[in-house]
Length: 182
Image: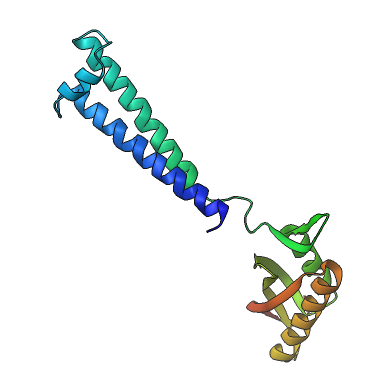
């Protein structure tokens, strides 16, 4: 089991414990559950309303801590997917942002006069990237499959040569076409 996953499991169990303890103490302080076992455990606190107030406050705090820990455990990693690893060596990792890969793709397709506009999407994988380009093409008697195959090769070569990252797939989505020069 990876350390990251182990930490999540431990935090999840702790969060469940705090959440359950918080709900239990809050229920005791409101009278939903009998509080005699807790009264005996908290004999050092004065009896009556102070005991209920302490139990309720402690219960709500523990419940809030449990919810916060659950939120941390299940929060999405905002950095995941924004970087691709170029190389790993004894000195450390070399990474490149997906924005940089997008710029390489955009520069590589500007040489194609058939492309009127484009949007680039990058998906990182452990050892490679997937590239999806949504584009509008100018139709001047061109063969769309041949032009897009040429664009795919250009993109694959540019990304591999410039960044050293393997490209597992280049998907071209022709979204719109324009007839004539424009």
